Length: 352
Image (cartoon, rainbow, N blue to C red; front, side):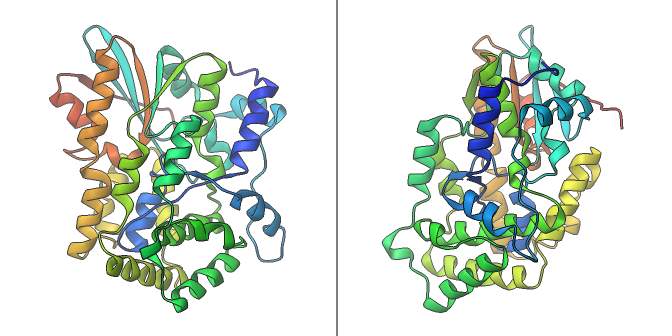
């Protein structure tokens, strides 16, 4: 496994990674920034933006363009891969499965699974993701669910601000007009993180999905595209306008990308205590609206994720579930919810 990467898989990765751009939603961009790095896998959409971003990134002042994966880079990356993130071994009914807490805006070296992560992945029969984006039906449904609606038009001044921010982030705004406004500005938070060295093209979830296919491993989505998009849309048009305005204000003040960077550092260091304490340092849950958005985006989804995981494991197959890390923490996180369902749950410690 670690010594090869078939050319057809590399070609597939290069084609996909150049066109996949994550999109996120929340009530403020500080909350958005915290959720963005762990929410991407279920929200990436196939658009023309990737190629536009690659071209524009060569301009002065733009962040470096993501480097496409090729067989040599894959072999070298796997040879040097280190374990990052958070891994739990979960057992029930004589079968062992795994929970893996991921992040999706990352640095190039982080997209390769380290030795212990890879061993857990290879020992499992099914790779479960929030959404399997290599499934064409999932991608089509996701794009349809996130499409802009006629009643979602923004005031001209806000549209102009989005265009300016897209230009500042070295991408063309035109392809994004087809999508809901909250997804346009949420994407900007992720693109801004490229200036912190974090790029959505380097998420480990897509690499795991490609490897699973090459080895004939089954894959599954733990959620539906419609459910994810419904969790992200603002409840009213007025709330959307408020969200877009506040998010642009915070992006202009450069307050979003540093939050992603701190979350990314906690992930790569395996610092679970830092992650569990994010509510105390993110400055993103101060209002009732922000707390309600966080509940909708994380806490309310966790029981459904646990139920879907339990159905796969209970169906007789071992599962490697790669899910955003914020879904793993606290009494409502997936490890705790699986304990409540009768699983034996223990962390897998990585060498640091």
